Each structure stands twice: as C-alpha cells, then as structure tokens.
Image 1 (cartoon, one colour):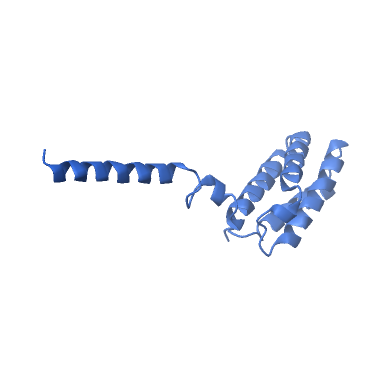
Image 2 (cartoon, one colour):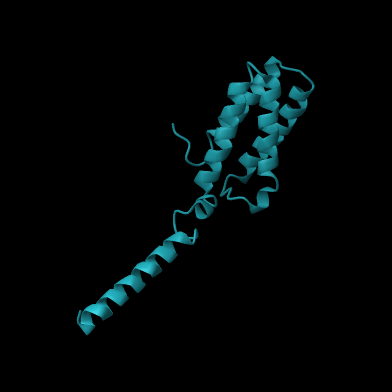
Amino acid sequence: MTCSMIRFLKTSIALAMLVVAGCADGNGAGSPENDARKPEVFANTVREAIARASAEYPKAPVACAMELQNLVENLGDLSGRPTGDQTATYEEIQGIAKELVSTLNKGKASSSAKEQLDKLVELGNKLPGAEG
C-alpha cells in the first residue's frame, strides 16, 4: 500500500466514525427526544390516550378512568409541554378528563359521562395533526 492509500483509508475510517457517533447520540433531527417536543407528536399522544379511553368506556368504565387518570398525570403542568397555540384546548381536555375520572371512579357510567368522553374526542380532533 502506498502512503496516499493509507492516508485515504485513515481519513475514511475517521469520517465514518464521526458519522456513526453523530447519528448515535440521540439528539439528531428525527430522534425520539426531539420528536417528543413537536406539537404534532404531543397532540397525537394525547389523541391516542383519548381514543383508548373511549374504546374502554362501554365495556370497562374503570379501565377508562385509569386511562384518563394516566392522561391527566401525563399532561401535568402544561407550561413545559409543546402545546403550541392549543394550550386552552389542552387545559379543557385536562379538566374534562379529571371530572370523568372522578365520576367513573364512583362507578357512575352514565349518558353524561359518555357525552363528556365524546367532547374529549372532539377536542382531541382539534389538536395539531388530526386527520379530517
């Protein structure tokens, strides 16, 4: 091997190592850490939780309450969340979810609880990234 070939090989290996190290640090664009800070990703997570709760309601109101309790806890303090211009919508979702948890934990599955759950679904569909 000639000196220039060895130098080329060393440079290629060094460059490959830098690329691999840069991609593996978890902070690059598209990483889960960065995606979680996007309003659309956060909205989708909330919408999915609402959908799971809604699906649980008819057959297992207590499971629905547990799902909503998880949602309330995950929303937590909204000031650090990527709510974009939808903070009021998230606050409304959080408030309704808290009320529903209280109602459902008392074993009160009712038409008003179903109406509140439908309202949550409607609010979730107002969040960024919702289809239709």
